Image 1 (cartoon, one colour):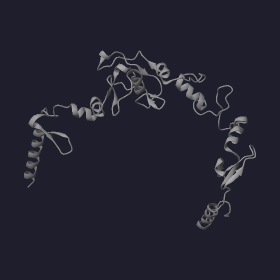
Image 2 (tube, one colour):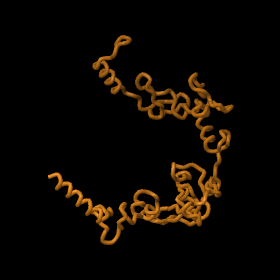
Image 3 (cartoon, one colour):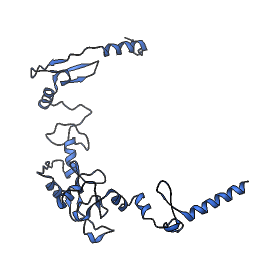
Image 4 (spheres, helix red, strand yellow):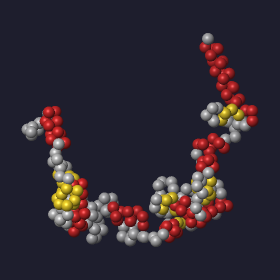
Length: 258
């Protein structure tokens, strides 16, 4: 081994690596707590100075941690809730109490277990939402107040608006998507939801493709229809009059350059 403060040579590193690769580990091991012989992968593997297997299997080690939880170190503060020995992770709270604070506004709020998804859908819906700007005749939106992925509400592993549609109108036909007529993606009002094809849902949106498809005139005011419409091999629409004008201007520039 090199002296303190000196780096290992390449040969020393290769020798240590070869020794670690050829170290034979036991295939089975007996746990001293439960007295059961289990495969070696049932024990937690640690690498403080090589490959070392813990003395207890994973279930027994978990029981020991529950019976004697480790004391928080000087750098880690405990959760500020009385009786909670878990380390603080966010806002001086552990992950459990911090999650309850975000979900219910109170870190001491008990977890709510709903018997079926319909109860959760009813409890997490605000029916006093705003009126749609484009379609006020549809009535107020029902805003989903539960978790979301930044755009659509999530009810477990399912989208909240799809669950609301299936609960009110039945199963969604295969190959169809749910379109929000109110253009509010957090709305779960069944009257604001409609099952349409993917193309219809795309053209009803406010994205780039929908804006281009709804365009009836070019930027110079020429109609994009009839003999003035030109469609290229990629399916894009062009103004024939503007295309002809650009070709003439390019030809004039080439003649002037000669």
